[in-house]
Image 1 (cartoon, rainbow, N blue to C red):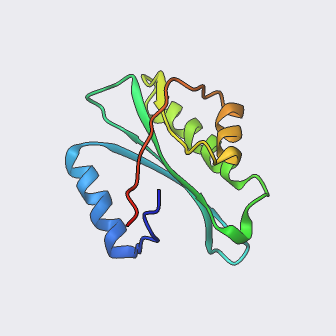
Image 2 (cartoon, rainbow, N blue to C red):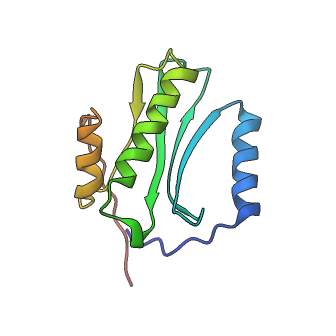
Image 3 (cartoon, rainbow, N blue to C red):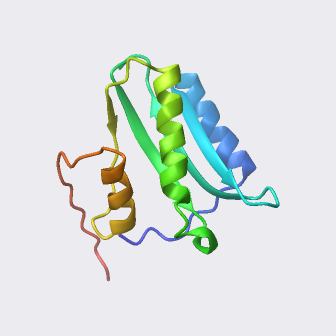
Length: 126
């Protein structure tokens, strides 16, 4: 699917986080910084306390210049460890990836995720 590049700034992130907080959801974010302190990778998990056994693995992104060094795996593993600490009732974490994203699929498999289903999408091009 071609969604185009999204533009996120501090205000949009703050608004997004505020909306989730208003819902009562717990949001866990792990960020990797380069030696200069610039963010180069991040991952997010969301947990709704009203569904104590489940959490959702949201975005994981590694800046293109920093791929291939295991940052995606490390930020995801750190965030999952933190989830275990703050929400010990969680037994399942739902995630998804495009089938062509073989690198992230391999990371997910290494972290213990397994396929439970598939979803397809169509995009009309004119």
